[in-house]
Image (cartoon, rainbow, N blue to C red; front, side, top):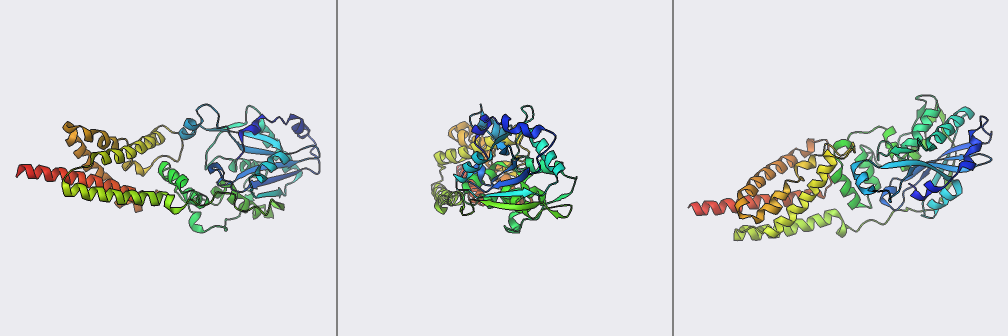
Amino acid sequence: MMSAILRLICLTALLCPLLSKALPADTTVSFTVFYPGPDIYELEGHAALHITTPQADYAVSFGTFDFEQPNFVYRFVKGETDYWASAAPWQYFKDAYIGQGRRICDMQLNLTSQQKARLIELALDNLRPENRVYRYNYIKDNCATRPLGLLEKAIAPDSLVLAPVTSIGKEHLTSFRNVMRHFHRNYPWYQFGIDLALGSGIDYPISTKEHAFAPALLAEQLQGATIDGKPLVGQSIEINPDATDATEDPTPWLLSPMSIALWLLAFTLGITIKDVRRLKVSRWFDSLLFGIFGLAGCLLTFLIFISVHEATSPNYLYLWLNPLCMIAAIFIWIKKLKNVVLCYQFVNFALIFAMAACWPWLPQSANAAFIPLIICDLMRSASFIYINYFKRNTKAA
């Protein structure tokens, strides 16, 4: 995906020759894939159309965005992120990715003159001011699926057959989430956030065509693709072929979500054993733990009920993380509301236990680091119930 600065480039002089009816005979159109980069929005790669004529050599991209747009983060979380199509001189565009140390695959398409003309016409139409902005969707409508859709429109309907992906294990191709996990393997906190925020909408079995949402996979699919039984790609040029993996080094395990969750579990176990022995709840710890869970629940509430992201709902983690966690975080300090907290802990324990027991049959995959955190929650609920009932029975005796 490109830096937003590219939208400031004016290429009217370069595009004008393509508006004529006669397409130069030596015009070539390539589908170019830029392999993963270091930033989280680059982990699946990027794709663009590369169009070359005697008068022009430029790239058309559908991944331009601007972090400095008003309320960008809020709009992104809400699912109202607008991306736009942009064009840039090929040399400028290519060098930006080479500078990041990224491998580039430029695949020249075996299209007829009519198909090339139609594809270029569609690309130019998408660059018009009234058409260039679109509502970005991470898995359904992105920098790879947009140009692929234009290619399908430029040729005969249903004539394009993408090749299956064989470069990664089948277990990573079963759903959108598992494809992401393959590309995010060095970024466990990013995947942790995705597994927290996105629900079952990214866990259903996906088709070969749906694998194309990841540009790095689309490159493989295009190189083995056919149009009416003939190879789609003619010449395939590897640019910067000596480039190694441009993503960052793996996060050390000691700093991973699982490691932190296990440390928290060990600490929670120690606090809980101490509380049960002395029959006294460590309110400061419950306030902190359930406060964090409650804040996460507020985020899920926004994503499920306000965000227009199609993949955020349903999210079965809401049985565990919801704003009601704040009852245990705040009311625990108010003596008169102790019974309210006790009722909450009963309900909380029952819901989480039921969720955990039914999870293998629910249509949603969970991050492994959630398990220690869920155990922490169950442990604190159970200890609160036990301590308060023991005290009550002791007084009654």
